[in-house]
Image (cartoon, rainbow, N blue to C red; front, side, top):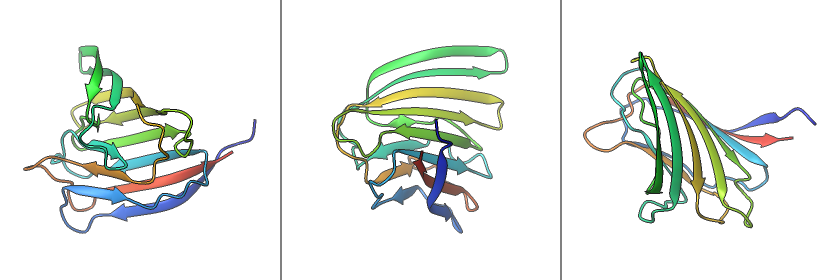
Length: 158
């Protein structure tokens, strides 16, 4: 099996607070995508991710596992409108398998952590067969991504 190669598609480092970041015109020439984010302050809870501006349909199904100090648990959601990272002072990595395929739903694996010692792992299914061309990452008002937050997207070649 060949070693995967990460090709940087875009990196955004915010020089001012912002409520959302959008990666658009994502080329369909790679097998998978990786999205990474790192935030410097605790003012960005519950970052939400949407594919192809799909914010209104209930197309995201997820399983979440988490641990924070001595609390741990899991949840399942069959009717969600986004992928929710649920982090503050965040660090996350998301893998999107076969993002450009048009014959299958998209499978997403996500890991995130926060300054509060929380770690989460998500498995998400986006119930759509369209190729992913736009990824929006946002937070609801009054929250924001702090200046200095860095978000990157990579195409994976194998």
